[in-house]
Structure formats: structure tokens, C-alpha cells
Length: 308
Image (cartoon, rainbow, N blue to C red):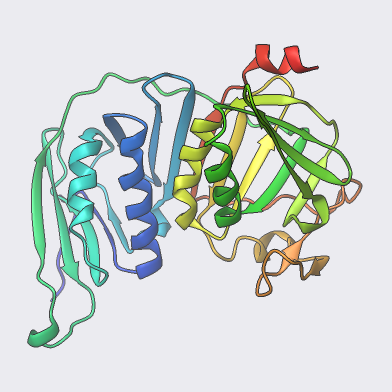
């Protein structure tokens, strides 16, 4: 039977990898802010906001094609409590798909449904939540595209592990790099902690200038709580601009952008194809994706200047 959806606003996910990514994104946003706005546009869902201290910013772009279904009667901007959303998503079982349905300015319905068609004995039960929305007056912030002095691709779990250690010592991380190493340093009254990462062990490393920058490590640590979004995460740095931390959600993005040259194995992971980009190789462009989660963090300018 054909069902006509012309007067219905909804989106649905059933693919396990994408459902896990969706849950990772919207469960962890509670650590940044009390409320978020979902901007449901013709071709994508867009979410943007700042943490409560206004030190970092996040942007989420999920294209229409990323969803199993994405039906829009009219473009909408809806405000949701991140605490409520996190609680709902915490009830999801592994076999559950997710659907946001009956979306209006006042409320929406979130359904968790079985995607496996298992027998009754092992079946997981569907759940449905109707939540009230909040009216948020938030303007979009434009972040211009730009080239960066430094582009680095890390294994996301590896970088999270390093930040788990750094955050124990101080709230400031100093970043420097050269041809051979990326250097993370933090220090307190009794200890200086350096991590020297050989550039030939990085998935990708390129730089034009070698800035010395300091950042609040607490926020970088928060960004890496999203490490389940993908195997890799990108850091882009400029001398006088916010750090950009980006996850690309498409697993085949590298294949579509010529980003498969110069592969080699490294000690970081025996099963991972590492890729290193030399700064003079202009033909090897950075990968792009329509589906991204991006964080921005302003540098601690005074701290960086004092260390120079």
C-alpha cells in the first residue's frame, strides 16, 4: 500500500552505524549546553551552538541523503532540551532504529523501533516519547572557510587516550610542530608533561607555518568524547584563528577525494592503513563530506604569547 507523506515532517534512521553516530552526537551535546536547535532545512539538518562558557562552538551537518527517510512539509527550527534527549537515547537498545515524527513548533515524537524483525521471544519492544519543545531565539554564526597552517588527521581513540592523560595535569595544552614531530605540552607547578608524536605515525600531516598555540584542554577533551563517530578525527590550526576539530561521518569519503595515496603501515595500529600527506604535494586534496560534526575552540592567546 502506498502511503502519502506530503503533510508529514519526519526523519528516520535504521542503519546501525548511522544510528550509533546519531546517538553519539546527541547524547554528548548535553556536556556543552542545556538546549539545542534543530534546523530542518530542505536538504539537510543543521545544528549549531556554543558551550555555556562561550569558549567553544559546535556545528552538525547531516544531509537529507544521510537519513533513510527525510520528509519535510516546511522548514522548521525546533528547540530541544539536551537533558531530555540524552535520557531518551539512553533507553535505546542495539537493535533499535530512531524516528523523529509529527514535528511541529510545539512538540515532536521520538520513536525507537525494532529493525531486526526477530521472533517474539527475542523481540525488543518499541518505545515512543512525545516531548515539548522550547522557543529559542538563537542566530546562526557564520564561520568562513579557510586554508589552515596545519592539518593533522589522528586516530580518534588514540587522540582521546592522550587527552585523557593530559587533562589530569593542567587545563592548558600547548601545541607546536616541526617536520618530524607534533608536540603536546602541559605543565603545572611540579611537573612538565611533553608528548612528542612522530609525524610519520600520523594518518595525515601537513603544515605551511609552525604556530605555537595554547588551548583549554578541557574542551579538546570534550570534543574527543565524540570519538565513536569515526576512526579518525581532523585538527586544523592557524596562528590567529580558532582550532577546528572535525569528524567526517562518511566512511568512503577518502576514496572519493583521491585520498588513498602513499599508504603505509605504522606502529599505531597494525590493521589501520596510515596515510601521510607531504606539504609539497599540492595534488592531494583534503577529504570533504556533506555529513560532519565540527568543533571550534579559541586559543588562549596570552598563554601562548608568554611561552614564546
